Image 1 (cartoon, helix red, strand yellow):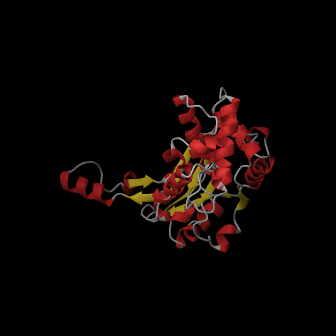
Image 2 (tube, one colour; image 1 turned 45 degrees about the horizontal axis):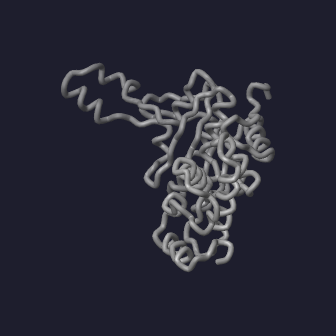
Image 3 (cartoon, helix red, strand yellow; image 1 turned 90 degrees about the horizontal axis):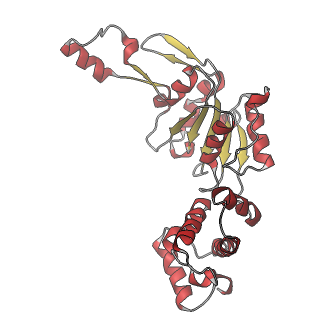
Length: 280
């Protein structure tokens, strides 16, 4: 493995040694890296950090519940061809001009190696991962309309994220390197805060971290706040200039941390009774 293709982290992303090793094993073995973890643990940002670190283009294929595997390869624009045949625009016999590559197709045909992020693969139906087995394994696909096989010029670095909303097929998992991103502990989260807010007041950071982790310990919450919500909260605290003394009792800007009415109601009840999170 060439040194230029070794991921060593980036200035904007705090990476553990285990995660760094998983990325580099994936690159060395030329296998997709499947990243799981709860929302807000930096799965998507990892692909951005890899692309930045290795100075590569990042191609993002965001998966929805309606996404089909074929869309990532190519689509045949029959509507445009019909329009051209009716109005005499272009050579309708040249079918190749009506083939539009998807994100996977773009990654395969790129003149340089790229990082391909298949984001939130578990949102699609159960057959979606199986429909990509050949393409991700052999790094090629066949275009029926032009009788052409598209083979990758430079095998992309493939990062696949999942929020574990549904189980992925065993045949798909066998073809991936797997890593689960644990939710950061308080020490690691302090590093993440420093990366995003280098000039943050230490007292504010410590108080926010204490309140945040006390909040995540509450069983009553339906949706616990994530890393991204903590960072938004700290930014709100910094901008507002509020006194962070007794922050776990005041809990200002709750709507930044909590996104469900029931959770906000629970916190308002705690505040009305004059409790801090640790006394609740």
